[in-house]
Image (cartoon, rainbow, N blue to C red; front, top):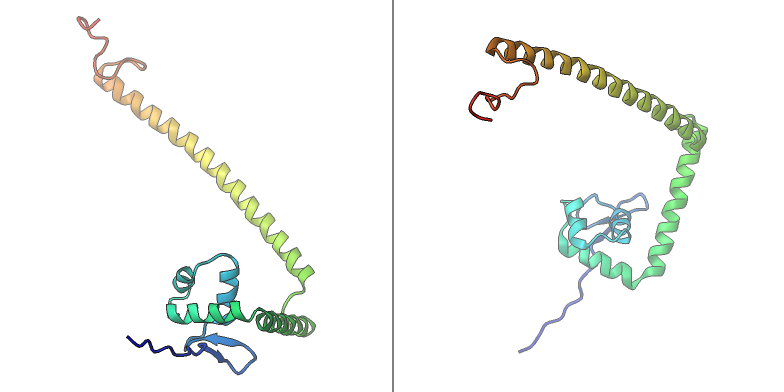
Length: 162
């Protein structure tokens, strides 16, 4: 039996903006690699990005594992480009600075915590009011059946059952 071994092309495509896309999808190599670095299996990566072909994910990961220096240079370049873009957007006033984002996050978290406290307070108040109404209804049912509050519900205190 003659096995035909062929080189498998790495299914990475240049997106025209300095990034790499996996197969014929818009999923970036960066996304696949970061999931893999977080201990996701190739099958889990395919689940996360359902447009990916499992064979493409395995091929891209095999290439990346064989070329760690190239991957490191690529990812460093992408991080530098992202930092530069963030800086430009901050300067233009289009996006918030990290300090402003932190302040906004703290403000939103305080508002969210206050809403949670109010909801908990409303639930406790509504819950106790609801309990009073249920207790009153139960008292009325017991009186209608001729049993005082605290008596056994099914006649456990009836004569002859002692």
